[in-house]
Image (cartoon, rainbow, N blue to C red; front, side, top):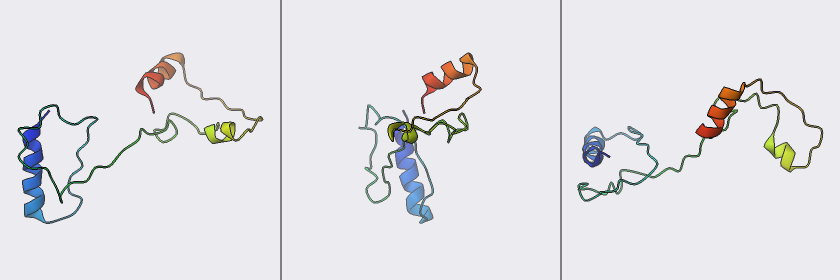
Length: 95
């Protein structure tokens, strides 16, 4: 969405000389990359980020474990306390 940002950050990285200065996030490569004048080689690295679990986002107590379910545990019990609106939101949001 903002190809000039790529070049601006490259410039800042070169002039500051420090590691780990910027975190650029996004879910896709820009559609039009012809406006980007530098690839970022040696300055940028790609990091695959996965969505947080509901436990990590604080939307689950963690009482029920998917690992336990897949490991065959049969005595599993828990109560989330979520109302239907919040549950619908979380299903749509993912995580």
